[in-house]
Length: 306
View 1: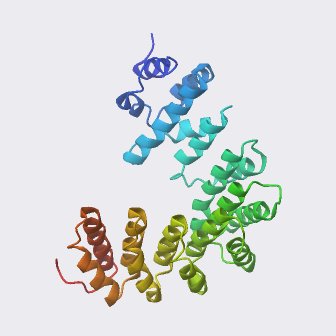
View 2 (view 1 turned 120 degrees about the vertical axis):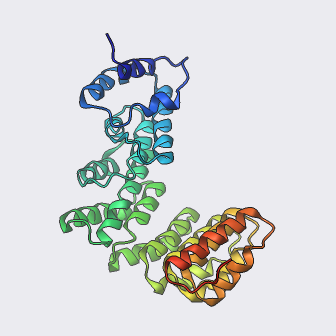
View 3 (view 1 turned 45 degrees about the vertical axis):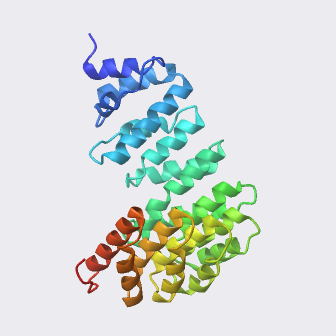
């Protein structure tokens, strides 16, 4: 007789059955025994259904941090379907186990799908952040650094993989990293330029600010969005007038990014503008401004009550 969890797993094989969130949530913190049962069943499930299952599990984990599907995601790293492997990497974003480092590096180097290679390169980004915070052993940091730099220098790697590697390596301060970011910024490839600006923010070196601000008036909305985000990462008050202009951008996502960046940057000019935004016609702008002002308070800014 099947247990309730085994019944849920068995129903996953039937593509005609809806994927109920309540049932999928029951797979959180699955035991080793039940995971082995899932491993036996998994190859019999149609690829499209497997993609849907993993995508739903990722959504559930993002919506509720108490749900843990990591053991399932790790199993799916070996799936035959590239989209399933890619989505499984995304699902492991909160997982900081160093054992994942070797797996992700191998996937960047050897997976036959550029989608998976790019996802794995992005997945290594959380470990470079840990390294920058001195929360990762130097041996791991060195391994990640060498791997990502090799990807960036590899002419045969797809641009999508190279740009994700650049974004991930950015927090690791070195002349080689700065050189890679600068070369990507000068590239004729638009996506590499976008990633370079993102990387400048993650790198945290104020010397990038003038290059970043050059993109504030770009006709490309993706570049303007990354300019706003990068300014927030650097937190230099020199960027405040540019951020105020971006807060009036026709693109709502750029507006939100600029307002958030003003909250990260602070200063009298930023604070005064954010207080004015509390009376904006847009409720979304009001809420973003309130959140940004709360961030200023949390950082010790002297902001008057609303």
